[in-house]
Image 1 (cartoon, rainbow, N blue to C red):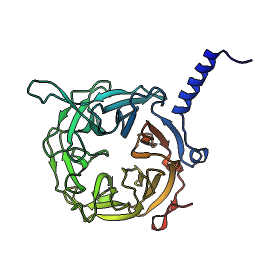
Image 2 (cartoon, rainbow, N blue to C red):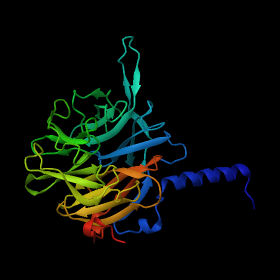
Image 3 (cartoon, helix red, strand yellow):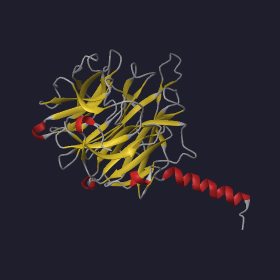
Image 4 (cartoon, one colour):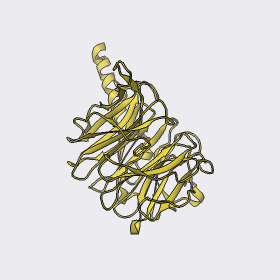
Length: 366
């Protein structure tokens, strides 16, 4: 029997919303060893902003997850703010705006709202949840901002501007070093693309920074992730303008770095992220291509130099980009990334179940 029109419309909306929140990847991708779950943080129907980008991820003290991203009418629009959602009891909470770029800078006290960019979450051990982000008209003129939450993201302090010359972590999460220092990979885009590092020993109250580790010309590089190696050795890697990923090494906890060189892995000048697992291996999430922002891939390495293919997260046309990756206390790996600029996708991976395949000369296996 045909259903009444109102009922049919309601069913149609429910199907649309459900389809927008479950994994839209092809079955062949979902069936890869180690791939456990894929879901959109919020459905496309009724999404809070027309566009979103540049997610970040942290595990909170109670074992839940928090994610943030920038969202608004479009990138660079004044209404772009930092949005936040929390994962617990099997679902993500409805997104709320956690921070924005409003500053009272005019003589008459009126407000001007600047676009926001590239949030980065960091959960301090036994302390506050930090939310770094950038505000300003463009990446070559923006400045660093910081807010914090003492209740797991339920409320946030009024964001404050970081000291002049300090951006905080420019895209990817900081790493905690022995002695309590927080090392932040950062970069600038106003005089070529150049990487530098900043650190704070008091959760953002005081800062120190290195000079740039590259000249921005031989290799134009930004947005480092930091990996931890035996003996306190550090490796940084990220995106470049040279169609390949770059990396550099530090023997003194990030104070000085080796000359920057290129890995064999391709890069379409798009954001990446990486994390060191508790078993000592390293996981890298990136677009394995020189053009466009699909596919989105996961690679694994024991030494940070030779990488093996592990997963294809997306391979349909469109934009799947700017990943964030962490390992939680239960051993699982969590990844978030921009899904078609319309939502943020969350993928859960069992790193012990991954089947690794070699990539000679940086070629992804068939």
